[in-house]
Image 1 (cartoon, rainbow, N blue to C red):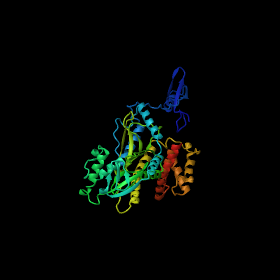
Image 2 (cartoon, rainbow, N blue to C red; image 1 turned 45 degrees about the horizontal axis):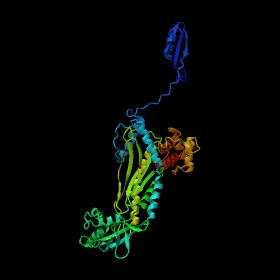
Image 3 (cartoon, one colour; image 1 turned 135 degrees about the horizontal axis):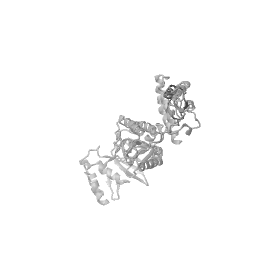
Image 4 (spheres, rainbow, N blue to C red; image 1 turned 90 degrees about the vertical axis):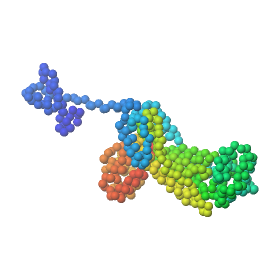
Length: 474
């Protein structure tokens, strides 16, 4: 069909009327034919050659002025997703979807590249886990602290062997008995070693004036770092839940999500035993953000192995709030767990189970957000199926998902394939996003019963990380 053809009649939609000594007249077919007949069919009618309508030129958005309507729609969906889950994105300084300045885009690109260069969380955690386990930590119950004495050399003794003390261990002993040492650490730290030992020993010998027999019990945490030494003083009910176990729980639960590996930044302070944790997913360098976009999503956490803080964690997001890529972090701290043990029984196994449950709940919420934003960032949408295999035909690709077991919904093969193809025909395409959309439509196409639909939805959730990993590797 030519550009000047009526799609219903296959006749020219416009005509030109040519007559001698008269200017040609051009117009809609029926109008020209009516005039031609009224004039006694004088002259000749010829079709008008209508040039192809040129493709619309891309609109150039003015930085700091124009709003990209597609970006505004994407950002509104993200805000609705986050607010429905109790998160409060910070307000933007320009309208959501506003085109960013070139330097803002450059800054985003550098942030994306920096994140890309981080190690995957699993590897970052493994390094810290190895360091902590190499310390070979042990706990020692000392009993009544009245019998302890600090030497001028800075060691602790009960009349037998001496125990080397790290500064935080001595500070921990002073902190365990605040009624005997009210606000004393800042003063004691200024004294010379001999005077400090004399002052500390004088108060230790008088502990019974302020504390009962049970309250005077003390427990030291030891590690072998170039020799055995105490790094913390804690109560007898303190339950060791060292960071290597906590990090192991994060690695295990993040792996169980089946999503592309988050990148990790883990800092271990050997002096304080503080560990800070950050595991996030980030929009790729190819993503074109606007003001209001969330481009990083994940979890943060911190823990301490010297009795100086609870295990804390929460979800975190980073949003662009200005045209120069000024960003704002937001999220929550939904996890806080103090590791409490018992004087009479070992509760370590129960404590580890609680850590795993806490981390599992936190990571599950983070995984839901990661799935949403991986899709919003176009990780699947920008990847054609030909980049992740040799199959060029999307329908063959879908059939192969079933036969290979990548899509395992416990639905008969022929039924599953037919539902997939029907879902694909609704909105065909050649990217991994089109493949995933076909799977989700298949669950609601009407071919499957309620139980099968539920299994397909669950299988779709498992398939997303498979496709996302292939997109990341493409």
